[in-house]
Amino acid sequence: RNGAHKYKIKGANGKIVSNKRETLDSILGHFSIQVTNPCVLLTQDDARALIGTSNPKDKYSFFMRATKLQDMKDTLTGLQINIDSSKRMVEIEEMKLADLEKKKDAAEKEHKACQHVKELDERLLHARQSVFWAAVQEKETELETI
Image (tube, rainbow, N blue to C red; front, top):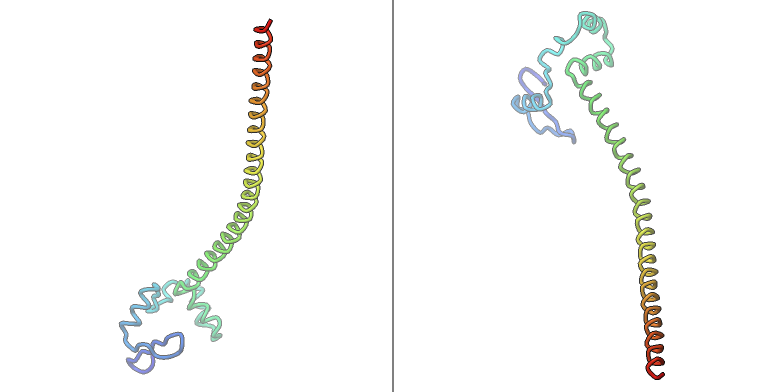
């Protein structure tokens, strides 16, 4: 707020985007910032400490706690830690998945090899049966000639 009744709301680039009170109220409402009297949330000891300090860093810290921005910052930091942890878990699971896919491919190759061996066994059995029946027919033919 500059002057008696003038507000300046600046964008990220530093240019004024609005100078209306309604815009300010909308921003404060959206972020649940109650700047009308943030001191209400202070304990008596904290209020006494604030009054006794002229250090800007301490006043900023007080403002962050009183407007609950510090709580919000802590929550967002915790969420970022959870996101990072989840990303690491996803990476680990993706590596496990790659290993499992390699094992699956190897198992499929082995399965195909086993199927080929089974087909060869069936062909061998069929060939043996054919030889057996050919021998039987030959013996029958010999018996008929006798």
